[in-house]
Image 1 (cartoon, rainbow, N blue to C red):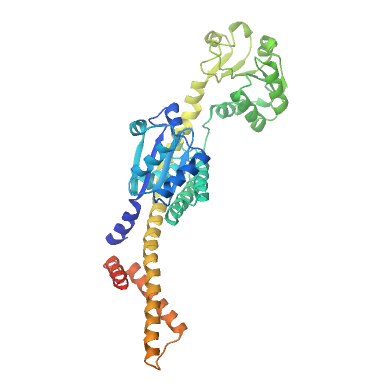
Image 2: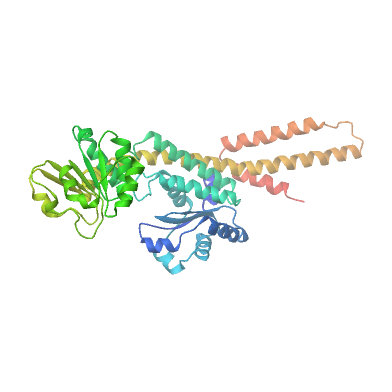
Length: 416
């Protein structure tokens, strides 16, 4: 890309802005003040149109709220966001970030690829991004340049997903526990007891059903009816909470998901002998520390699972970041090339229309003077197309005076 072409792209790209607040600097309560619903976005969109903005969308999740758009200043986007949320400028300025041009473009690609997610490589944000764009599209707030920019970002994300290992491996504690169990010899013959039927316990049930369907599983909960319903829904066994001691002694593997403030599995619940494995997925720990001292008893808590499995996963993902960035760099260049051609195409269209007007004017003059050298409509169209085609070739091949040349033509054609 020549220097002139670079300046053309930069002028347009500098108007692309992002204002956001996310998990890096803002806690959940602060992030919540700036959340946006689809209904709220409709009102925000009306304000954006009234301000003359043609491309604006908002990504609002539990981890971030970001407003993207083409504007004269990023502060226009901040004003829109603050106007339609419960947050104020002071809080946003303290915890927020503001980007435009190349920095904003890179951020968009990073977000779409999962490089800016709280868990590296988490592609859930891509679906959230696409839904936000679709909401804005329904409000006619995605212009042609924004549309093509997003298309390149989505293409890059897809390529990263298929050609790198950025999203491979375990990132959830509940699944990390299943991965650990899969490595146990003859796991299908082990009896598994789940204590706790909350959200975490239900996720463990789902994963056991999916990845270890032959392993016998039972569940209990302080509220028996909740455990009974969970057992029925996932086709596993149910044990009343009053039988906890017997159930623990009878199990080979005990998965604790109770999240109580104090331990729920005490030393008296564990019989001598074993071997037994306790996976304590609770925060704080719900398996009493003294149980670790018993012979043939293994206790693994949530931090140990994170250190042994999740940290390895994240290390592998970090090693894939350079590959992902190389893919992003390729698609960023593709977009900038498209932006250059798009800028020229607008001028070419104008020039083609003006040539037709000149030809028609010349025809009228010839007819007035009864000139016999009249050209046909087909010849006029072909002549205009040939001129436009030659100009397009010159712009792409002869970089030295392309921008000045096309600007001069348009200035001349605009003279009344």
